Amino acid sequence: MKRKIIDMLKSASNRFISGEEIADKLSVTRTSIWKNIQTLKKLGYDIESRGKLGYKLNQVADILLPAAVQSGLNTKIIAGENRMVHKFSVDSTNKLAKKLAYEGAADGTVIVAEEQTGGKGRLERNFFSPKGKSILFSLILRPKCLPKDAPKFTLMAAVAVANAMTRFNLPAQIKWPNDLMFDGRKVVGILTEMSAQIEKVNYIIVGIGINVNIAPEDFPPDIKKIAASLAEMNGGEISRVDFFRAVLEEFDKLYIDVNAEGFEKIFMQWRKFNITLGKNIKVLSADTGESFNGVAVDIDSDGALVVDTEKGRQTLYAGDVSIRNC
Ligand code: BTN
Image (cartoon, rainbow, N blue to C red; front, side, top):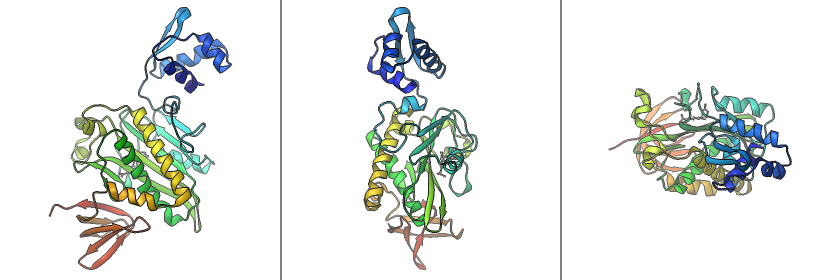
């Protein structure tokens, strides 16, 4: 209902629409419209009410509410009707997504939060998740694939965000496997988790954290040197609602494509955005805990990184790489 009210107010583009007109179109009472408008106002929507003239939307609040994000959203699977959960605060959207997936949430359900009090990063790290400045969300996916295919969804997520950045004229650079970087600093982090049996994936959770409007001085001292935001890249703030919508649309397109045709196209797109291949790198392997140097050669058909080292060719399935300037 709230989404439909926002849709109508938006399409009236700066004119008043009467409560009666909205109520008639949505086949509900005027009181119900009034109540919903009061809730939207409390959530931060600047809606002007004027006697008989009715309501006018002055400004769309940049809150990632389903009503706002789904208005004009062009997706088939991701974040559709009843497939979006919004929280003002949560410990970790990945944690909540796992719980909801276990309880049977549908393929394509999105859990998004304004802030996380215990945002999880890769390799047991934390993810900085301040209120109202980032896009912090997790997708519940139920693809028909083998557990060994799960890491490929991580590369897919990175490509989806890169495509969204391209739509906003922002240069996207992916560091293997899935960090989006600016000037050597991380702008977007992705954490993929899975529940599976030997031959079957139950569900995959793709958690994405995007630093959108965080000013450099607002990062904690320990991550200031390694983190950046879209606003910094853009030279000004970006609408979180608009950028989130773009990411969901790009993800939806790729997800449909992968379900029909596999990952080959994703790998091609990933290679286009990557900044790792051909570089001297330092590797921290998540499999062995070992650290070694080498040259990144390619990604293989599993999305694993192929690295030439002094000891010969090695394949890295999970871990962290840093690019060495030598
Ligand atoms: C990394 O770069 O280390 C991965 C960071 C992933 C952070 C996102 S924010 C939304 C989702 N919920 C979490 O707790 N983590 C992921």
